[in-house]
Length: 447
Image (cartoon, rainbow, N blue to C red; front, side, top):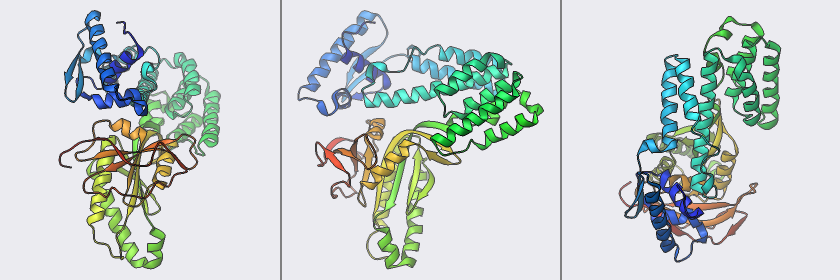
């Protein structure tokens, strides 16, 4: 199907990302033009949608764009979407693998991977929400690739996958599962020394890049190779001896960081009261985080670090926590005010903790907030889209430069009728456009 221009292609992709669901016109305008949107952007969007409808009709497909307040919905069969077919085949491959049907798993996974024709969503690479979805799809593709290699190893095709794994570990050097598979494939090909050399290569790389040692699973795999353990020939060994992609390279994950404002002064003023208050603070925040499926994975001084699979859940937890903190009784004099920040991105999971640039960014964003304030990064806001919890809105605070980060951050404040909305200017190095809240999006109802 031929589309007349790049904007029409962008509209099609944005609607496909929410296929069979209504996408607000305001969100489409924001995704297409961002801060550069002009007064007539709504009219221009209607023109692009009209051209897209014509192209779909002339293309003879079953997809149709329907106007449905407050925007548009692209109606299309799931089977017509390559991304949906890929995910269905991936699920089927995993079912075959769970039954130890390695040939069946390899066949399904190869079929899934054959649907890829280059990087995902390249037509809208400049649209933030598309970048997030493209990252998710790429992560799924790499997981499928790892699982297809695992199936091939289970079928005894170890010699055939050695050259491929050599290339894959160079292209994706932080994915430990690929390194483990490479070690197993080399060992089974009669190349024990090369398998051990690969482990040392990985060890040096992790030390230089992340300051880490290989995972316990890979340490055990190296020991098994040294001992020439009989179980090294067993199908599925690489899967057991190397961490899965979800344990090492995961994302996008949404992170919520918190910190108590002026905690040092409270500790100095009344240590006993602060000890009691901190315990109450931890209890309240953990309850709000876990109530929506979040995981507290670390304590940061007098704050917490939590991870969420769904970005809207992080916002819901932050709002619930701020409301609980505001209504709680504290042993020390004066309210206990907590600053919070939310950001979404790719991360490395190791030993029940997360690592990577996404955590650096959310930590720097937290440093820009005031007590009682919840800040949200542009990436997290894009991931949430129109799926904000009830009664929650985003206030656009403009672009800010954060400490030690080269890329400026467009910052949003999470607003709710029960929370304070007035705070000092952000504690950032510089701001752009403005530092005055302007409503971006919101949803009414009951939280």
